[in-house]
Image (cartoon, rainbow, N blue to C red; front, side, top):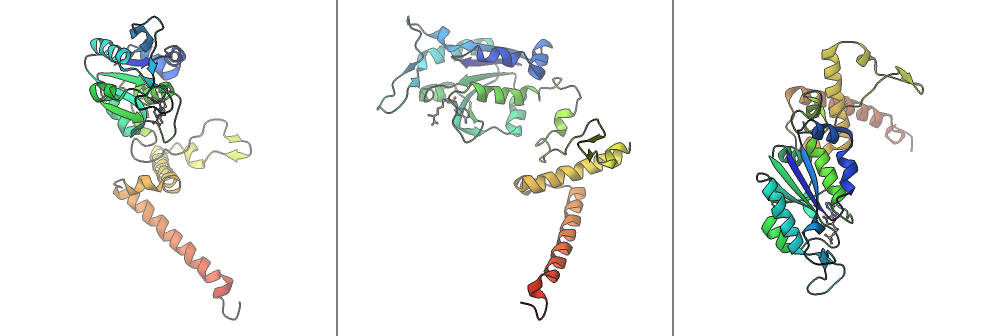
Length: 262
Ligand code: SAH
């Protein structure tokens, strides 16, 4: 996959391409990444990329001409794919968005700076706007790295085990179960017995159960919007019966429910 990141700070990406999964993907030819310096597309002596906003107000706006030229140059290299603007006004990045982007032939990311980019760039050149959360960064570079990291690891062949991305949190609508490695006992805490049993079926079942309970406790909203299978419904039903019993016993033991006591 060809990836171009349009930025006024291309050096920020040098380290990003050079580490971990992203580096491996690049060295195996699964991605062809490039940070494109927007300043190289200015035509004035001072290589200005910003200007004052029409209508007044605070801050500066990214000038459209150098950006348009940078996008066109990137499009000439990457003629198939989508152009993404990082923006706090965009759709929130999710695992589903990342999966969709990982299926593209090429990606062009535009990193805003100052108060953002001239709206005409968005109208003409941008296919989608992506936000990494409800907070404001000083530039789109870190947001682009977050989005690229989430996308690159989903490109087929990038992760070692063919299904390791499929087990991750969110990919099946649940948070992932917890993990343990050696030593067997650490800091007075032991590894759950089942993980040492060698019984793969029982382990898989335990992991599913743990994923379900982690999700229920931390992110019940994920369960509300997910279609549960028969096993999962069964597990939840059993818990709800247990909870009901516990609550019933608690009510029975409450001092104010005991006759004669206040
Ligand atoms: N004035 C803008 C913020 C500009 S911040 C506003 O209030 O909406 C400068 C640049 O940082 C943006 O153009 C965008 O590219 C990037 N950026 C800031 N916050 C971001 C976020 N949450 N997600 C993605 N990009 C963000």
